[in-house]
Each structure stands twice: as structure tokens, then as C-alpha cells.
Length: 162
Image 1: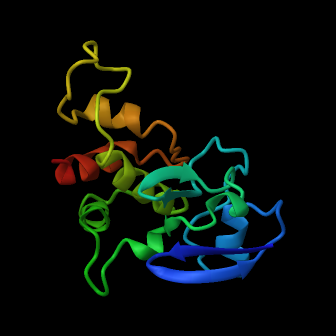
Image 2 (image 1 turned 90 degrees about the vertical axis):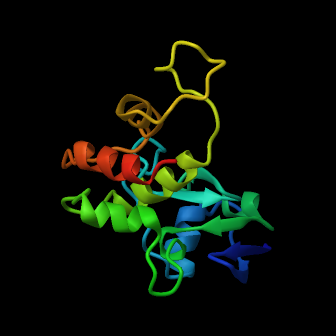
């Protein structure tokens, strides 16, 4: 079936099998290999992309379900040669080791910074808390780093957080 979606600001019309995941469409059909297939079960976050500005595990999203939507991958975060502020902060804080999870971490962090409200670590849910290291860790808990670069990832996000 044919679907049309905006990927990193470019309209793409693609013929897909109704069972194809968004991750497989991005990697195998569109050549956007930033999002990684880590677990293929939505547990590691390596495949995180933004769907209409909200973070999502692309391994769990069917390509046909995003017909007409805006998809942003790690390849679409920078504007030309200008890195996204989070990309620059990840470099400055050495927030990666092997780099496998980094695209998903970056997309998740971009989405997370746009999300309102507290997480489970904030006692009073009526507050819009500052993004403390604890709050950042909770909000990013869906993205695993097998190398254990969490301290630097949190520091990079905290630098960019409003």
C-alpha cells in the first residue's frame, strides 16, 4: 500500500507492506540508518524517532500508521552544518562510548525536552519541576546505554534543558 510521510522535512511517497515497521522503512527503504534495531521489542530505545514531535519507538510503529505524519530522525536534527544544541552538548560532554544508542538518546532527549509536567520522581504532580538530574534520568529511562554513559548523557541534557 502506498503511504506518504514527511521525513526530516522531505515528503516521501513509499509503497510498503502493511506489516512493515517504521524502523524497517527508515533503514531499509529510505537509507536512514541512524535509528538502530537494538531489541526490536520496544525495550531499549535505540530506534527512537520523533513522530509529529513526540518520541516513539520506531520498531513498534507500523509504517502504515504514520501515513501523513512528520517523522524526524537523528539525521534531521541538525540544520545544515549547524548541530542541534543537544548534539553539540553530547559531543562536549562525551555522552557516548560506542555510539550505538546515541541516535535514539538524542531523539528521545529532544522529545523529552518538549514534554510538559512532572515524572514519577516528582512528588507533587501539580508542579512543573526543574529538570533535575533525577527528573532527566526518569524521563530518559526508556533509552538504555549498554556502555553506561548515563552520567555524561544526563549532563549533556541538563546543559541544554530550559
